[in-house]
Length: 365
Ligand code: URA
Image 1 (cartoon, protein in one colour):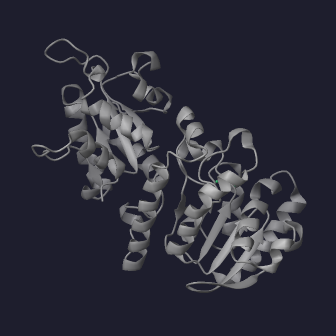
Image 2 (tube, rainbow, N blue to C red; image 1 turned 45 degrees about the horizontal axis):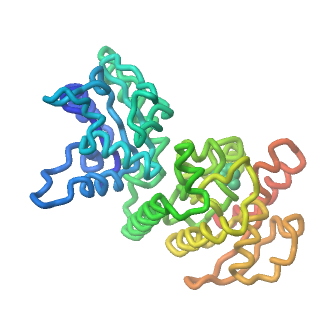
Image 3 (tube, rainbow, N blue to C red; image 1 turned 180 degrees about the horizontal axis):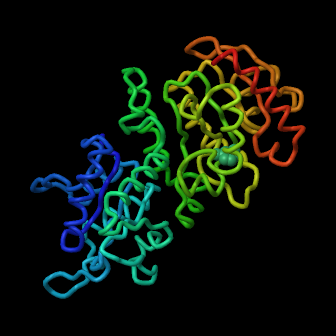
């Protein structure tokens, strides 16, 4: 499946895009880079075709050259203002679907001002741009590739992350489909917040065939800006704890109870849990982990209640570090409630407690 979508205007940046494509294919699978949509057949809805193509990507590269903003058609009309301009349709779709959109500046182009953009692509102006210069082309593309590898959910399509296992591939595909559903979930209680701020929904990331899954509360600002869970200060603590037990993030799967960011760092409300929990349930059904580690009381309460465990009547202070044996439809598992990494940020004592609890996970590694 295509993972990196290159959106560009031929008259504006064709030369740069050709070079970009050649370099990227040295670093990624050719089939994972999607550029020119194949001929749209007579009678086919071209908007739908473009939207479907964009929906399949993980990262959307919007190549902006010197004439991107003011390129005009034969009648002198600015192309970006035309309803059927494919650059605009693709870009609007990527923004609407919460894709990771990276403006790529080439030919010394500048980022457009939001006032100069049609409403459906105004949010582009808020995405951090990446500049590719003529003289440092290869080095710049390598830097870009490095960022792409960090940005795109682990275990998608990059060569070194590709897994040989057919089962893991099947699980990865199922997770991608689920993510598409999440992105299209316009009825979510946090959808408006997502759209108004240009936030990216965060399903989760990691090994689709992981033994261990970590479930946090909800993505924070850093997470929804990157579309990845636990990439802020709590993520640093999580990575540190994993290292202590000789694990990396790529070895486990990391997700949350909610998949969009609630406003002002507030706790999840019941309507949000009700909406997002089925996504978490399906993640568990797909991955089938042997150990479910909950981070914080919200994820703990949800999982203990879902599995109807007696510990649901106890607090996280009573439950943390317990290895609770139970059953899922696919087999026997353990639930391990842990404190949330954010709680330990300012307390050395709490951090030590979390470290001790993590050490108990060693036996599953
Ligand atoms: N806190 C969470 O619960 N989840 C994240 O992804 C980040 C911070």
